[in-house]
Image 1 (cartoon, rainbow, N blue to C red):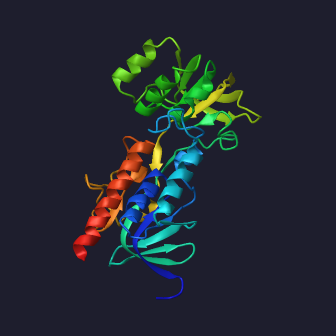
Image 2: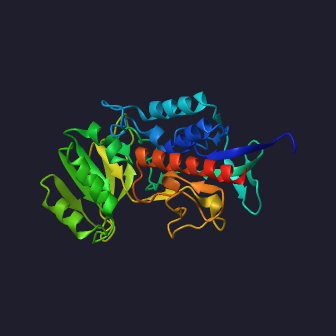
Image 3: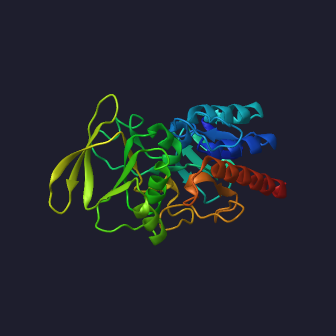
Length: 310
C-alpha cells in the first residue's frame, strides 16, 4: 500500500448524527472506525440554532454543541474523525476503495451518512440572510419567530406541515406558491385554509431577499402578470424539497427516483458490507433522533457482517 492509502475495517462518510452514532457503536465494538467529516462537521443539525426535540436535553441544545458531544463520545471510545471529503468510490471488489481529498482508503465495510441538502430558491440575498431570518427548518427555528410575521415558500406536504407548525409561534404565516394549485394533501390543505393565522399568495415567486442586520423585506413577482411588489416579513422559511447528497453513488447503489439510497430494515444497501443511514437514505422523517438510530443500526449490522467473515 502506498503512503496515502489506509486500510480500515469501518469507514463512515459524513459526520452528522447518523455518521457519529455509527462511529460510537463501531468504536465500542473495537472496530476503530474512521469518520470523514465531509463539508459540514455535524451535518445539517450543526447549522441549527437550537434543537429542542432531541431526548435528554429538556431545555434544548445548540445544534453545533450536540454535534460536538456526539463527536467527543465517539472519539472517547476510539473513533477517528478526519477533516476530509470523499469524492469517488469503487465497489467492484473488497476491500472497497474510497478516494478522498487527502488520499485513498480501503474499507472492509462502508457506512454512507452523507445527508441531504435543502433545495435553495437561488435568489439574491438568500445565502447572506440565512440565520438572520431565512431558514430551512421550522422545528429548528420556528420558536424564534414568536409573535412575528413569517413567509413560507412551497406547495407540498412539507411546506404545509411546517407552516402549520410555525402558526404555534408566529402572529401570521403567509404561504407563497409559484403555481395556481398546491401539491399538498387535501387534509393538510383544509387544516391550513381553516387556520385563522394562515394566508396564501398564489402564482408568485420570491425574487430577492433584501439584505440587512435582519430580514425585513422580500421582493415578490406574480408569474402571470409579472407585477412586482415588496412584502414585509420577519422570517422566510423555504420548503421546496431536499436533495440527498448521493451523487457519487449513482449507478453504484440502488436508489429511488429522488436519489435516496435504498436500504432494507437492517440499513443494508444492495452491495454487501455497504450500509446507508440518515438523510441520504431517509426521505420521510429527517430528524436527528431517527438519523442517529439509523446510524447505530448500520454500525451494529456492519459489526455482525465482519464477525461472520472471521
